[in-house]
Image 1 (cartoon, rainbow, N blue to C red):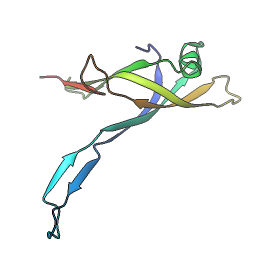
Image 2: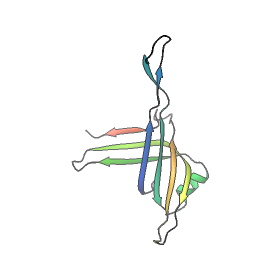
Image 3: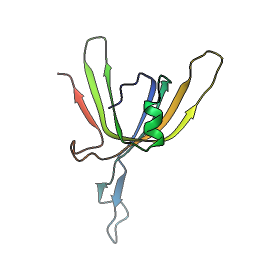
Image 4: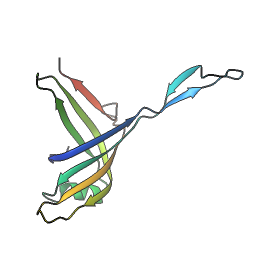
Length: 121
């Protein structure tokens, strides 16, 4: 799991439903779920080479974060198996180096999913 501090995180989830057609019918008779695709972009400020090396070496990692509201309700998101696919380093005059990593979450055998979401009760 990464311990980086994300300045932004974008998550795209596609369930990729497929329509099933039968001969002689105009409309789909059912929907079948196919593979779920999870992609995203994580932006971090360069602190050390850890994430950069994961990208260069194509090392699987994980991403975990919490979304909460003022009442204390939350959803914990866990992507147990993530691969960084592209990276962009932005050099600016401010002295900070934001690095953008595009990623794909893949199915994890241990968790039985590419994403695990836990909701507070």
